[in-house]
Image (cartoon, rainbow, N blue to C red; front, side):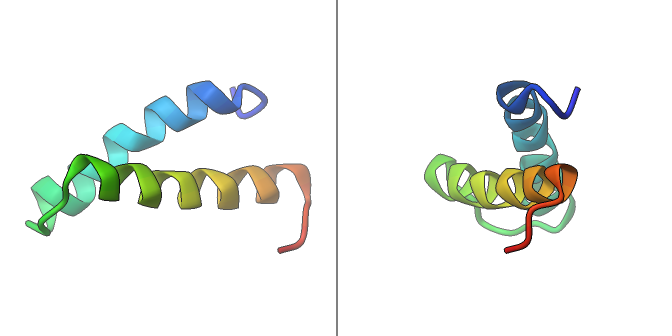
Length: 53
């Protein structure tokens, strides 16, 4: 699953929105969700492949 970055990105955006907007009531628009999601996916993929930031 982690080898398919586009799949991970699609699944993570749902979690980002759920946690930040719905659970923590933070104002979040589509562009902000996309940026945050991109950063999180990048971090997870780097960790998965053993890359150092």
